[in-house]
Amino acid sequence: MNRRVNQTNRDVLSIFRFIARHSAYLFFLLFCGLSILIMQLQRKETLDAIRVRSTELNASVSEQFLGFGDVFSLRDENDRLLLQNARLFAKVIREDTALRDTRDLNGVLKRDSTRVGRFFVARIVDRRFSPMDNMLVINAGSSDGIEKEMAVLTPEGLVGRVTAVSQNYARVMPVINKDFKVSVVSDSSGTLGVLSWKGGNEYLAHLENVPSSSRLKVGERLTTSDHSTFAIRGLPVGRVARISGSKLFSDVDVRLAVDFPSLSYVLVSSAKPSREKLEIMNGGETKHEPGRK
Amino acid sequence: MVVLAILQHFIFSRLVILGASPDILAVFVAYVSVIIGQRTGIVFGFSAGLIAGFLSGNPGLAALIGTIEGFISGFFHVSPESHPTMVKKRRMFYFGAATSIAAGNFIQTLLSNPLALPAWVRIPSVLIIGTLMSMFLAVLIYQLALKKILRD
Image 1 (cartoon, rainbow over the protein chains, first blue to last red):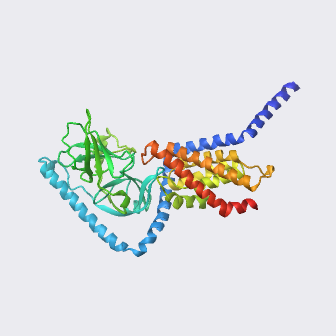
Image 2 (image 1 turned 135 degrees about the vertical axis):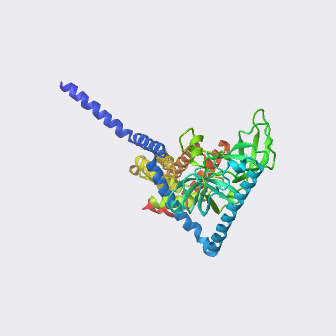
Image 3 (image 1 turned 45 degrees about the vertical axis):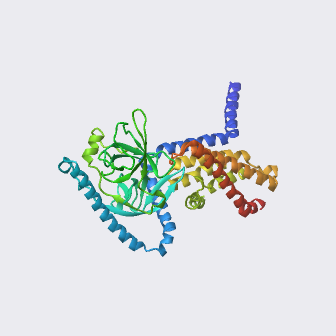
């Protein structure tokens, strides 16, 4: 009996000795596990809220950093001009869309060409184009009427879409992010495709799903199409730069309209595709997926 | 640690050269791990990564990288019982920092690629340039501050 108790004690002691000897490894495994757990939880709402708060903190500090140089610039004047620019841009988009609809005989009657909404002007307060992070932060948030999935643009073209919103700031996923996709249509031939960015040059994107039989030409302007789940149609995206043929689908390079390195102000479009349309496109239910078009 | 995380996020991570930036937190974690011990290094690495991750929006990955950095640099731990010389402490700190930073950068390039850079560009740029920049920072910090602390 005593021998058995001694044996058990020795076993327990040896387990403790093993743990003490390899505690660093156990610590390592424990913290790696915790990190992986956090990586998994990052998609959950609690951590999403923490990320929104960190965006707010991050943006407000970055704004102070960037705002230092504004002492010497005419910021108010600039804002006023940008607002005016936004109004004019809304008008141009509206008229451009109406013109396109007029060309299409059924367009004017069937489509609601006046749904361009209004544009909010926002300043970029933080930007990161590094292998770790690729995003923009703008100084407009939910208190200004910004919502998730709104389209962000400049008068030159589409910049990206809003992915997270705090009270005063919003995080924007730019077109030059590998997770970004948008449905586009060409100006003259009416060719539809999905625009995405595959890395490398920040001026060039790629157009997918273009059949070889399409009449798409080099130099044709591409705008967002009716199929987009976050942007209204008619927002300029870029121009076709190169078309190389293959058996079924063409390989199309698109020169983006926006000059990302020099971006400082953006417009956020309040107009969104109708909810009913999204529900139908998603097969009866509205979903918010990261790779939406 | 919080101050270092803020410095890293708002200053050092902006010094991007060919997609890589220096990492002051990794230098700090390497120092703790080499001088105090591997377990403390792991805890500090995890915490430092978590704080930095909350600022950048990716706490899980940053915490994982910090943990790995703390673990690896812990193999270069200088035990005070061995009465190490300053030269040994310095050498071990540099070795520990270089190895752990390189490993951290490698894990980062494997698990995160938002710019969709091809592997042949991403790995050399982040691994070599990132490690060199961080090591430059490590040498600078050692000469300016750590040398005095270790001597005392």
